[in-house]
Length: 221
Image 1 (cartoon, rainbow, N blue to C red):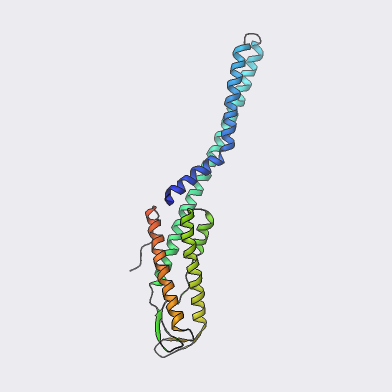
Image 2 (tube, rainbow, N blue to C red):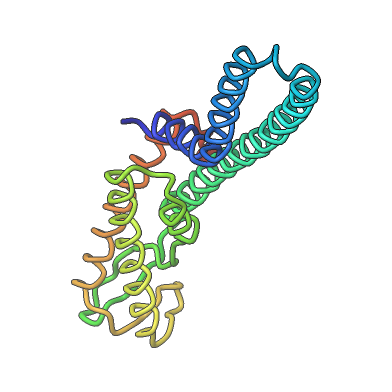
């Protein structure tokens, strides 16, 4: 099931569950009105004045119940529409955060001289995943989509730890602007490989969001 279909299903499920008590009241009122009408037809001729009073009372009560039920239904409907709007806004923000991470990974990499005296180029900026975590907690995604997003968050967390460690090994900078540190070539290579995985997964996430009608920020020139 697509993300759009799942969100639509969730909207109607919330609306139905929120109005379940109202539906029960309406059904009970209709049954009571039908029973009252049946009894009235059987005994109206014997107690006409009393039945006239009962009719007015029943009409008043039934009208009140319908008015209250209608008001509650409208309130729950508006609340469900508000939740749907918030979910859409969350997905738009997620698209912005994901595109921002891709933009960072596309920036000019830093020149880093490793412990074995080789110079490599790698992006040494930590990435964000705050909105991604909120999106999972919100229940917007299906189980497969939540799994995919969780795996992406896992890569982002490890990426940030690796970046922090590599930056913590810095010992200086030479005259050409190359950062010198005690990180090994293997650490740099592993980080670059992880960044490539993040690029692939982030691009796939943006594609999925765009297919579901979420506007994805344009890539800067």
